[in-house]
Length: 120
Image 1 (cartoon, rainbow, N blue to C red):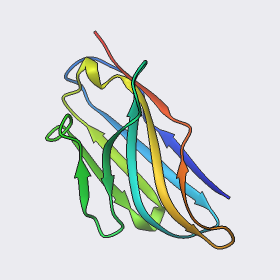
Image 2 (image 1 turned 90 degrees about the vertical axis):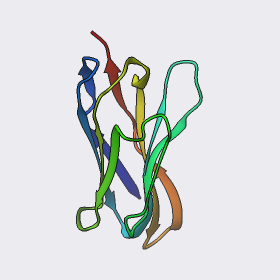
Image 3 (image 1 turned 90 degrees about the horizontal axis):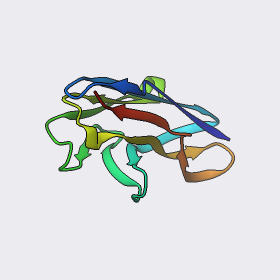
Image 4 (image 1 turned 60 degrees about the vertical axis):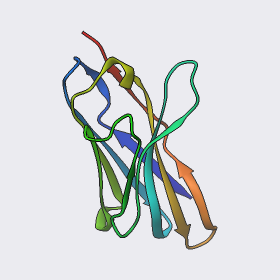
């Protein structure tokens, strides 16, 4: 069993910053790609940014230059630094990890989501 626990969401004014964290725990042997997705009301879930175990990143054009993804492999944790936030960044942000476990093989795991609201 794998758990992904997100933290760091909240209410912020336009132009502000937030840092999201997602820690993976459980019977983890290794983690490949980790990523952040978001889903706004009435919209489909979309990829925000992803990072491989080696540190290669992929960032959505809509947040490029404002958001930075990073990870600490020793802590099984992925971060999303969000700067210059805009109202259109308002969404529930979900963490995802491609994990290999001791007992259940390889699968994708999701966190419960954390709300980010950008409003004055």
